[in-house]
Image (cartoon, rainbow over all chains, first blue to last red; front, side):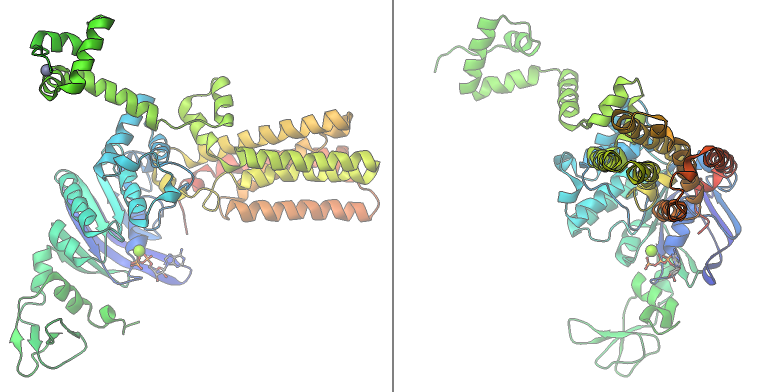
Length: 281
Length: 270
Ligand SMILES: Nc1ncnc2c1ncn2[C@@H]1O[C@H](COP(=O)(O)OP(=O)(O)OP(=O)(O)O)[C@@H](O)[C@H]1O
Ligand SMILES: [Mg+2]
Ligand SMILES: [Zn+2]
């Protein structure tokens, strides 16, 4: 079943088209949303979160049209914005509790239990009485993830959830999200291709407001099959010097090159070509 | 160390809280010294009871401490979630209310020193304070978690109205108190309809502009209007019968607009 169906969606800011006829579908499980800066990931996530309306095209979320039935979607939604704001004088508990009220968890006792549960899920139980202004950036991000999990939402939208997390927390996050993704729809916008490889059953690549790729991470990896080379010399646009002193080249075979297995990142870079290295518009 | 140990039966009764004070005390004294018995008592504590205890402790430690305004709302029998949502509003907290009160006191003091201009300064100020308070009560600029709140099921429109009403009531109470205590005549309420008109208009404009900008623009317009009449030497003209009727009409039209456009507050057109 497709829980997210995006059809020909257009969204402009003034005269600039941030989404330019975007279409893709996805269902339960974890879907990664990749794309260079400015590709439109946040714009898309904000629309899926019912915060922003479409200019044209249609959205179906959990089988409903957000322009007609916003409330039932919001009741089943968890959302971490790219730049979540916090009441900095609140404690972690107070902040998550505040969001829980906005999520209509009215019974105080049940609400507090749920707040404790999500705080423990992101490993912040020990600091739940600490003021948000006294937390580190990564901890604050985890507070943001915690509030997105309140009420066991069926559609979870996370905009760059792992930005600023240390390796241990990133691992913990993967564990948490993969468990949630077992029966619910999780969409995460990210720049971390390792997270996509480790976590996502599907990946959608956005480029300049359009869908440049839609499939499994393995299919994205295979985009670069037979095109990644290690060689003593630099060749082409997409190449960089690795730790061993050899150049990793993506594209045509350079002289004295050895073919290597591509990664998802290689596939992604090849797909976006110039845009990925910042040459395009 | 003695040969005496806490047997299973004693452990169960201790964990269940069924021992008398003296026996319990001697069990505790022994537990301090004997690891083996600590183990058997720990095993005898029912998990469910421990869980409940722990929940109780967590609740005491975590539960948010309501501020004074929130407690006042609870006394007025407003439900806990609503009181929380109002209590976090910047312009319903002590610093803002205190600043409000101080400004009003200055204005009534001025009114005491110089009848006409002082009175005007009070009447001009009294509606600006709730407008500023409303502008700082909701929206992207004033509410850091606005984006998260927008995606939550709780109605943003309802939240806005509740906070605006609470701000209006608190600033009105302050201005009434100041006005009646120090001026003591009809002019002490002449600001009320203009205040209502200006705050409702602020809410209407907030569907398109950040409330802080909307509020500032309206406050400036209001003060400009006051100045125009003041330089024409009719300082109180805006508070006469015609002014009051106009204010009432504006407030009603704004309220109708607000109601008709209520859906626009629930998401962004960009
Ligand atoms: N509120 C806005 N007003 C004007 N332009 C905007 C606004 N929000 C986004 N844009 C523009 O829309 C385009 C897409 O932005 P968006 O934030 O969706 O990109 P993104 O894929 O999330 O990028 P990043 O990886 O940097 O987060 C960008 O060119 C951006 O400048
Ligand atoms: Mg973004
Ligand atoms: Zn013993």
